[in-house]
Each structure stands twice: as C-alpha cells, then as structure tokens.
Amino acid sequence: MSNYVYADYAAATPVDPRVIEAMKPYQTDFFGNPSSIHSFGRVTSDAVNNATKTIAKFLNTKEGEIVYTSCGTESNNLAILGVAKANKDRGRHIVTSVIEHPSILNACRALEKDGWEVTYLPVKSDGLIDAKLLENAIKKETVLVTIHLANSEIGVVQDIAKLARISNKKGALFHTDACQAAAYLDLNVKTLGVDLLTINGSKMYGPKGIAVLYVREGISIFPIFYGGSQQKSLRSGTENVPGIVGLAKSCKIATEQQTKDSKRISALRDNLEKELVKLPGVQVNCVDTIRLPNHLSVMLNNSKATNLVEAFDTHGIAVSSGSACSAKTIVESYVLRSIGLTSEQIHKTVRISLGRQTTDTEIKKIAVVAKAI
Ligand SMILES: *Cc1c(COP(=O)(O)O)cnc(C)c1O
Image (cartoon, rainbow, N blue to C red):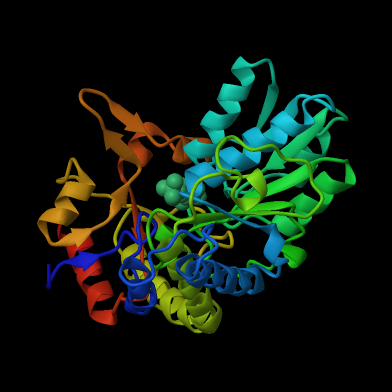
C-alpha cells in the first residue's frame, strides 16, 4: 500500500502509534478486571481513572460525567433512547435534522414506532440548520434536541452553541454527535453549551471499539443495557481498559496538535480545491459554509468514469462517494439530496477527506487523477 493514497479519513483514521504504545501494557501485563478489589484490579481501575481525567479535561467536564461505550452508534443510542425513557412522562417529542448519522435517525425511527413524535428539521442548500426553524419546532413536550456538530459527508459545521442555547431556553435537553469533529474542533462542552455529547476513537486516531457519551451531571437518563452495574449502572459491562487508555491518549494528542493540524490540513484542502475548480464543470458542495478543515465534497464533471470511487481506486487513491451500490440498486446519499443536489449531481460527487498523514505530494496526485478519469 506504499504508493496508495488514503483520502477517506472521515470513514476511519489510522491509530496513532503513540496510542498503540499507551495501550500495549493493558493488552498484556495489566489485564485485571477494574471491578476486582485485588491489586490486578487496582492497576486497571487506576488506569481507567487517569484516562477519565484526561478525557474530562479534553471535553471540560467532570470525571463523573464521562460514560464509556463501544462505539459512536452506541453513545448516540444511549443518548436518545436513554433520555427518552427517563423523560417519557414529561413529553414524547424529539427534534433532530434530516442529515444526521443513521445511528441518530434510526434510533429516532424506533421511538416513532413506540408512539413518539420526531421532527426532522431540513437543512438549507448551504448544509446549515435554520435556528428559527428549530426554535419553532420545540414545544413543551420536547424532551431532547439532537443535532450533530459536523457532517461526515459534506463536512458542514453547525453553530451548536446557538442551537443548544435555543433548545435549553425552551426547556429541551441538547445532544450533539461530535464524532467527525474531535480531531479538529474545540469540544469544550461549556462553550458548546450541550447536555450530552458523543465522540468515538475510530474517527480521532484512537482505537476502534471505544467511545464516550458525555452526560451532564443531574440530567435524567436511563440505561439501555442491564448488567453488573458498572459506570453507575448507566452502562453495564466490564470496561474496555486498553480502549479507554488509548482513547485518552488520542484526546491528549488532539489537544496538543488540533490547532496545528487544522492549519496544515486545511491549507492542503484549499490547494486541492483550487486545483479541482480549475477543471470545467467542477463544483464544491457547501463551499461558502464553515466546513471541517480536512473535508472536501466535490462534484466532478467526468464523462468517462461511471463509478468515481472505483476509478480513483484504480489509480491508487481511496475516496468515498455520494452513492453506494448495494446488490442491485443504487442508494443515493440522503445528505446530498437534502442540500438540493439532483441524482446526476449526487453521482458526480466524491468526498475527499484528508488527515494527519496527508502530504502535498498526495494532494498533487489526487488532482492529477481527478483530471484524468
Ligand atoms: C462514524 C460516525 C458515527 C458512528 O460511529 P461508530 O463508532 O461507527 O458507531 C456516528 N456519527 C458520526 C457523525 C460518525 O461519523
């Protein structure tokens, strides 16, 4: 894979070697169950406590407000189903947006089957949610608003502080899915003003199989798993100690290099964008909106390639597309559809997402291949 260019960091990030180093002892020597009261357990429960300190600092939370889960999907489900269960007597209405990750949308659809009402807010062609629409959608039965910080397909960053303020003012709790943002944006929950927040290791150079749900102290939430009462019974199951240690390391690294990374990577993105728009008929999606620094969603104008991801792959470049072919049908991206793209435009769209390992040479190669296919 040495000459292969990876430009799909929004789908998965490689694990930082420093993260692997930090995890190693907990894969081998320190294997004890953190709930055990002997010294094998003490070593790992201390490791979990230290990791929690680091993550709490990264998010500016108290340590008791951090809940570990197995993935972003689980954190999002716990936020939605857990808050819904605990607050069902207060009201049965949730507000979200049409461009959320399936782990949000499908959890909401499951609640609809149980008699809940869900409002799916549209987005404008710039990918942003209209704050006024949100304000009007919240009623006294609304227990939760869940809107993601940054979108994985178009990279658009929502004004979460504003949306959270509006929601809280009208009496609803606010959750944000920040999975795409953790490596680049400030996730201080006080500045964001959120009550719940999701991050996962696999999108921030951390380990797979570990994620966090921040749950503000004092809010009502019920578990969705039942078991041995770990994590104050909110998420039973033996803690994934190596995963937790690794996630803490990736948070620490993000704190240290977020600003520098964002600057370097957005410069590479801007250069690539400049090269691509020189080609006839090429258009960048949501170009005037605040986007993630590593993200580029672009409509190419290729007549030759029928499948852009395959065409790039043939030339040794991994990107992602606006449509996925399942067995027989072509599933078009609901996100691209929501910003007003036609089928034809969706099929011409590729997502190029850059990361810490992306180089200037790679950017040049992507531009050359985009021209050739
Ligand atoms: C990847 C992702 C998820 C799901 O995370 P998993 O760890 O794969 O379950 C949720 N939301 C967003 C925005 C994501 O990018």
